Image (cartoon, rainbow, N blue to C red; front, side, top):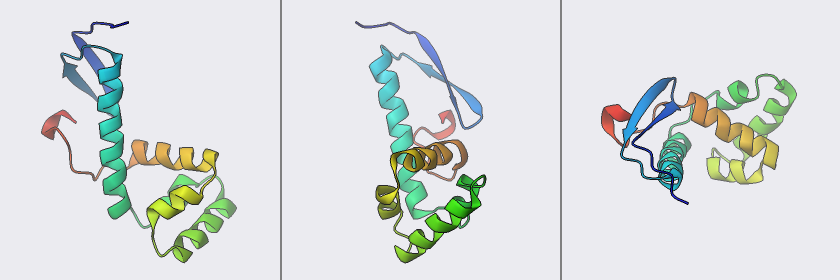
Length: 111
């Protein structure tokens, strides 16, 4: 079933972005997926040095454990992600989407 939307508002990076001519919800999921993939790729090459401590700030013992693993992996972000359990990988992804803003933008000022 196709839901026609002439305009949709997407909250992203603490601001509202106006998107025009999105034909259905699948288009919306595709756009959100592109933003997430772009953000993750740039994060893996340019992560803040304290991202683990910031992401797991409410669990300092777990943060220390994850930091020691990450150091052992010599900064291999994708390996760290693959080694995390489901809850912690989701926590990291949410933190990246909510907090990392240094990626190259896909659509200039629109995103």
